[in-house]
Length: 384
Image (cartoon, rainbow, N blue to C red; front, side, top):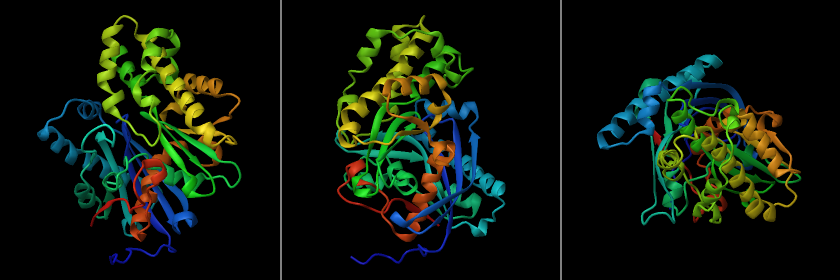
């Protein structure tokens, strides 16, 4: 099979913008990066990062029930928000559109049904790339998950490739832990083939949903851990939640809102409608304990000489969550990703800048040891 020629020279710097709306669906994250080289020789430099919050009504519609009409409308509407964030990050950096090689847009995940959970695995991200291309005048690479799913993988996590390129240690392996809506870990060392990664369970998703319920949408999260800090863990409920079969399933594995989203929050609220802060304390402990058990069961046996856990994502801004995680995993050092010299808030958006840059030069960027795919494949689809 003859492959088409690459769209760019891997040795020339490529300016790319990464766009992401995470499982918390609260904002578009945009990162402008310069990428030089490819694969193990790739070097990435962050030039600019912005976070553009969605209006509350858009968040509510993203998290609410969908039909074909509402999903189609939301797809195009989100494309406009993503395009504005791309324009904003260029303006902040003082970079002309003509200097940018491509935009890499992950979009907003609306459905994720990986192998082992359904007869026909599938994944769906929206945020119409044609709208982004039209409003920015730039080519857009999108749909990064689908090719990995087609190759037999979960299409997630995608971040281990970025973690290996940007943060791998040359001596002991490192754990890069994301505490977004869903929590996931990448364990990276010198060789990409030794990288393994998986979703460890809920991150902030259950906490966020309960916080919205408890405050009648005044707060979108357990701000500074103040709500969970006023509650007490409900032991029997925590033990029930920890029996979830996803948590016991060996990697590769991925999950999403279908398991830890509004349906679970509704069930918890129905059981204890008068114990809001106790539910939040229990949800926080669920994140801590499911993460710790994932390390004890799957990470430590494969990486007994782990250097440290480096944490990114919204969970780093919850001091109670971070303190509990540090205590539970002691003596393993638990540090924020910033300690490696990269702002943790920009990490996931920068991932999609890197994936767009690798698409342009034809470099496969999935990690089969993490996703379960049969082979390495080039990720993404191009909208000129």
